[in-house]
Amino acid sequence: MKLKKYFKVWLKTTVLSFQVYLFSRGASLLYLLGKFFRFGFFIILLYLVFGKTSSLAGFSLSQFITFFLVFNLLDILGQLFFRGIYWFRGEVITGKFDLTLVKPVNPLFQILTGRTDFLDLPLLLVVIFLLIKINPVVSWLNLLLFGLILGCGFLLVIAIHILVASVGVLTTEVDHSMWIYRDLSFMVRVPVDIYQSSVRAFLTFILPLAVVFNFPAKALLGILSWQSVIYSIIISMVFLRLSLFIWSLALTKYSSASS
Amino acid sequence: MVNWLAKYLTIFKMSWQNTFVYRLGFLAWRLRSLILLLSLYFFWLAVYQFNVSISGYSQSVMLTYIIFTSIIKAVVFSSRSNQVAVDIATGDLSNYLLKPVKYFIWMVFLDLGDKASNLFFLIFELILLLVLLKPPLFIQTSLIYLISFLVFLVLASFIYFYLNLLISLTSFWYPEHNGWPAKFLFSILVDFFCGGILPLDILPQPVFSLLKFLPSSYFLFYPLQVYLGRISGLGLIYVLGFMVFWTLALRSVVNFIWLKGLKSYQAVGR
Figure 1: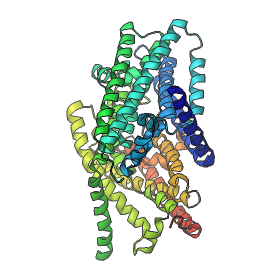
Figure 2: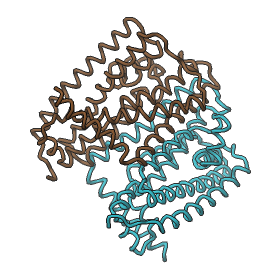
Figure 3: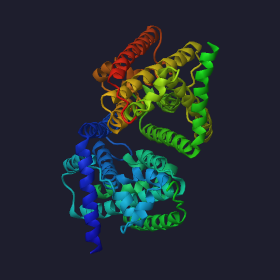
Figure 4: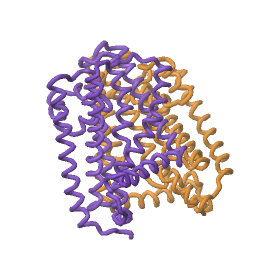
């Protein structure tokens, strides 16, 4: 019953978002072009840098591209569903967040899913198409494992968005924290195995971006160890719980400024 | 002349002080620049574990290129002229038109303040980076190259300023989303075509030959080529000629579009 209500709310806000994009078609086209260019430019970089050697750190060019495509898959899913986070700062500094809090729908749900970004959908389809094209034969076990680790990665993406929202309540700073996360994720567009051990450890254990973006690709390629599978499940659960705890803590500090 | 300068120096000071009003925002912005630099640094460091040279770039030359991109970005790309598009779209431009100031010169001094604060903090960040990572850097000792590099940086800043203005001026006819869609596309194209991710001469020769004629190549790639000593003699004059051409050409186009735009300007929202 509750799920049905939330689905209805999401559907309503999604339809409204879609109408906004249709209303400003010129702007949507420019944003869409930008997203495709950014995607294409990195593929070119991979071809130019890794295309000249048959194998680099044990990975072939097609495997590098698989890592990049899986990175995009999760990155796009996060942006597609949780674009609302980019508007959250405005709500906090104007005090409009008060209105979100009094509604009978979970405030986190409202903040994160308030604006579905349809402009990410075309690129998402291209990414899925290329993933299938580059990896035409994948065993059922690897596919199953890929689904599981992708799910863990998505939970971590949700946790990161919740943490950013918490920082937003505490400091009114959202945009930069979101971009810091996205800038850091530049490093995990390729397998972290190519980096020095300290960088690799940082991206796996301290800020587990490698778990979010690299592990699903490894699962798809059948090179993820069982220890990593267990670690992925545990860290995603822990991070999600921790982010929800910090969110609850942050809400107690909300000052309702300007309202 | 003194009064004229004093007026605009106040704007420079305002821009500098503005940085310290939103301290957390500025710190986060600097942190982002550092993260981007470190990301690219570690990426290329990793690439060179498996390659001795890429398209004639040794490890030290490539890492110098990457570290210097952050300096050039702080000088050339630090800009408040993005505000122009917002001013036009929201009608705030009217406030400036009524003041006894030249709007573009106002923007130049706002930019200068922004560049100064970014450069100031970048120096500390770079010292920290050099001490902690001890990267193998290429140090240019020739005075001619160093002076040319500085001259090209100034020219690159002007080319970027005018091109940025040109994109912002589209808001006169297309004010949707305060001009951000055009800015978004522009920043993605510039980031790649200026050589901020990889040196442009790594690209296939026909593509590189074409890019030589675009103003974006002169923001970062060519000034760095000069610092690295990869361009000399006639090449320096060729680059200087192109940079002067683009500065003057873009200035003329911006002035023309500005006058056209003002005729269409309706001060919407005022």
